[in-house]
Length: 114
Image (cartoon, rainbow, N blue to C red; front, side):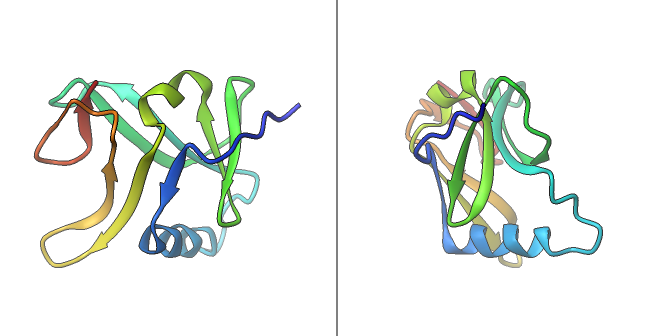
């Protein structure tokens, strides 16, 4: 049984466009969902995870603008209210994270502490 929740994270228009583009690449596995999460490590203690993955029994399922997303249930407390954006500039290209739960962040923008 899938546990569907209201979206704990937000995706900006730029992030939505890039994720939708990635899902249209030839050979994309349509059984995968966008995994949003964290793992230990990084210069501030925790690092963000964002990528396509198979759902597990520990995941919460949610949808953002038609994009199926998954998150390990234990990660929600770290990510609730986070915004994911896509930057496509000369000096900064990639996904960025704005997390209201982070007490400190690092210069690279992919690591944080709570």
